[in-house]
Amino acid sequence: RASGDAPRQVMLAQKWESRLDPTGWWMSEKLDGVRGYWDGKNFYSRLGNQFPAPEWFKAGLPSTPLDGELWCGRRQFRRCLSIVRNRSSGKLWEYITFLVFDAPSLKEPYEQRVAFIKRTLSQGCPHAAAVGVVKCTGREHLDRELKLVDSKGGEGIMLREAGSAYENKRSKVLRKVKSVHDEEAKIVGHEGGRGARGFHCGALTLETPDGRRFSCG
Image: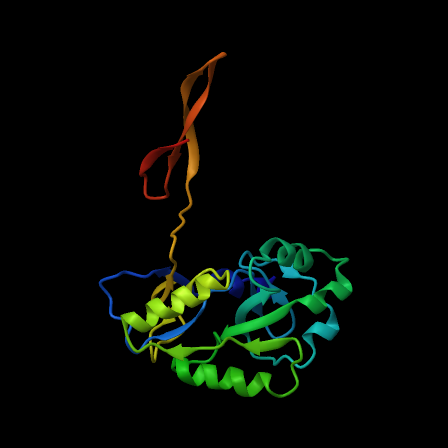
């Protein structure tokens, strides 16, 4: 399972902080697909599980590892997940595009890795493409791009620091910007409630990974 090890160490983003200046960072749309790691032969999930992509879908892809998103459109996450996980999807993979945003094994600055991706995928990879990036000129530019993505039903903006290396961790050089922030939390209890017909389950007590608790409902 050596091929399944690298996907577990993909680069992850931290949340954008308003105190930071985005000038000079590279912007791209935050995609709402399924993270896909190409190891040169097969696609893997972040957990190291192999996706059963047809051979025709993999045609033309390089032997160099690529990090990207298996995507079939905005607000289509469930459909995308259903296709890439199902061994009987077959022809349905034609609705999927592998949008590539990095080449983890290249020990070069971000801009050179992007150039490699564009050059490589332009040579006969019908089901893959490089994610579009644009250099941010400042906070107003970032706000405009975020509003544009929001208006199209997108998830937000990804920011990559210029000249940065690929880091196998949650990195400060990769940031996500969203109009509405979400956060993981687990249910640790509930509060009793009273209604017209007696007692019923009231608000849920949730706990975030850093130990903060709050009520919901």
